[in-house]
Length: 297
Image (cartoon, rainbow, N blue to C red; front, side, top):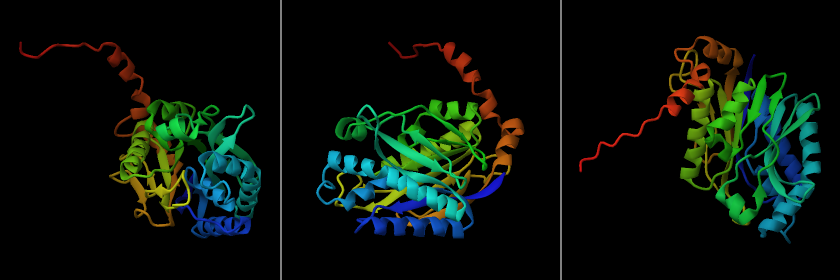
């Protein structure tokens, strides 16, 4: 299966009203479709720009979270319409979502042109989410079996934990989507390095899509730093450095890259290295760990 994926470098804007948001989202989706994309990937917490629609709560972490969560049914309906209209899969920007028990989770949603939707909650929370925002870990990891292929979602910090990706790979994932939101270069590089490491270990594609630019009105996403990237393992028919496509830092734009999932199967079967197949060999090696003292007394 071969198709084009579009990864957003998405700016957080102050929006005048709902119509401005709907128009912006359609511009972005139509632009991805015009570029030939079958899958458009938006970033983590891109949905927080909706907080600007309520001036009374947008300067409050808790208030903006509650307001954005209340809009998610309307947001999801719009994404479903655009997915069907433009004939492409869309990973919507994640947003806080209040669960039935009153907790908030960080939720991304994947829409298909046929009208189906799947949701993935972030698994491991950053210090900001834990200590200041009160966002909790959500539902289980999910593998989405789509007409494009088998897709997993690792939201930002989740990409830095290899066992999450390994669980998806063992379930059959061929493509891992990594929506991200980072306010420093160090944060951006941590996620990018994580995404590239997961592509190497899982012998699969990973796609990072970040927020970019400043939104000084927001206490949650006031500074955004990053560049989109589409990665694979440096082996076989993949690029020598594993970089399928990458954007320029801080530009508001799509980057496009070709995804050929047949390459994933070929590498896992007969690559120069077989990281996926050999994964469990490290367990026996780790169990035999020996601590030896070499210091001079």
